[in-house]
Image 1: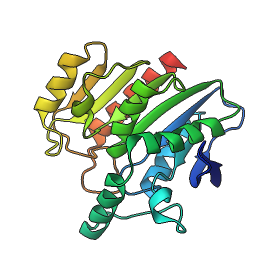
Image 2: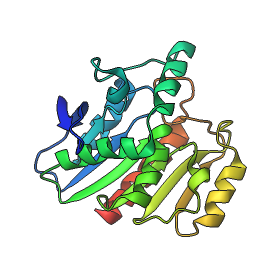
Image 3: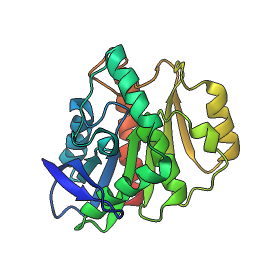
Amino acid sequence: MDTILTASDGHTLTAYLNGPDNARAGVVVLPEIFGINPYIRSVVDRYAAQGYRAICPSLFDRRTAPETGLQLGYSPEDVQRGLGYKKAIADDTARLDIEAAAAALQGQSVKLLTGYCWGGYLSWRMACLSDTFAAASCWHGGGIAGHARDAARIPVQMHFGGQDHSIPLSDVDQIRAAQPNVEVHVYADAGHSFGRDATPAYRPEAAGLAWERTLEFFARHA
């Protein structure tokens, strides 16, 4: 269901929420540059089906007001629109909305974090900046290499496609060298957004393995 959150600076935003109220652990799912569209909502639903209370905040609401809960497709026009919104939102600003999503998981004593593309990058940033979460799983997070030497406060797992032209393997090597304690997985035949089953980028074998690894990782830290 859609719900309304209030960040610590008074900003209100939409979020998509699913899963049992009495779940022990909650998962904050951070979106790609396409907002809380059907694919990202399906990810929330998958975590809910695993027994988690899961929520995804609409991080673009700060730029699109009075429109809220923006859902973009994958056309070139939507890509450019999403990139424009992303560039206009600083990491520290996104953090306020991510913390608001975590705060909405009031019944959950353990809070976990995952994200895709931009959300994967923000998951790493939050792992280094926030004390809210117990663990983070970052999927194809572009830009992480630029913060490779930041110090993670929590256990982190990362997933990259070996054929991802937007995240070169040299970036992955840089992350591995700087973060020997981070669990980094590379899927040789996968490209960017390999888990997104709504588009041709989807690689079922890689996506399935990354999903299993994420669930196992979260189970260890929940």
